[in-house]
Length: 231
Image (cartoon, rainbow, N blue to C red):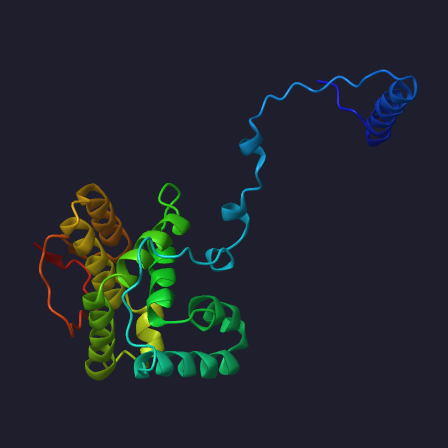
């Protein structure tokens, strides 16, 4: 196979450009190139280049169910304050803490981001999971209540849980519980195939197998949980 040197490649490109320019000057209409790609196929693959947090959040498919605008959220306030302190103490984690917590408006957004990035794989993209998880949580007041009670349970009863922030970011018992809650809603909505796909990913990533049809209360502490199965 012949390899063009840099000089010959540049010369070839210049000669082609000159011939095109001469054709335009002579009034010859430039032949339109054959387009072997559909217009939409040349879009830049943002999902592969930029992190999920740079893509922003889509609006929920229907109006979100949120706590009243004037009500305080002490757990979310604590999570943000802890993240700021940790970012100052460990500058190497500042980008991670900003992407996971400080760039978000509420606990629901931050949790959706964390879970999507933990559960993603090459065929179940983080952007797709992010939209699904976010829409489920934002439309379900029960989950919004449970994610806070569960976090408080970890903070109060798990000696390994140093802060609310660490429960949100690092504890797989907390992650598996909240992922299950999303899968449970999907199961009850009749989206059973997607719910089972989430169950499979939860089992693979966290080593905890909770069937999406299971009924679990709130204020739950699942410590480590490796090998735990719930039916």
